[in-house]
Length: 194
Image (spheres, rainbow, N blue to C red):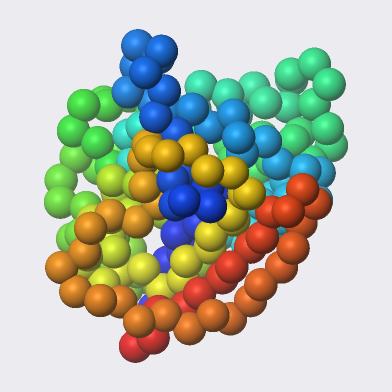
């Protein structure tokens, strides 16, 4: 069975995006999450280890608006160039009923996310990563997430998109790793206790 991880940058008060009333779109402010070179390299190493990335619509739109050409951006670092190349080459699944066209080694699933993620986990293959709070909440409630990676930044934003959604039942976790990065950023990696 394949392992499914959910990891994102998160504020100390638990948000992956801050509420920003000045924005006309529903996307939030993530300007607090600019990674150090060391943290960016850690994310790149994580992405290289994944054999499949699962995205919700909002995160897909954010990622696909930048990373297809991220290696062509002025002042792109070698890690950013490698991240862009890896992002394009890694197989991806976008769960959306409103997107009908994707590119960069990606397919769209408009049907039931739990059914498809369960099927993907049962296949042979390497680890999978899930991104996007709404999609991750669906997988979390279904008991499909095996590992949580919280990269906590020392900032309080007071509201926005939470990393964790409301749950029907407790999920017990075991802390398996902690790591510090420059700027007071701390990784906490947990595995689901089965």
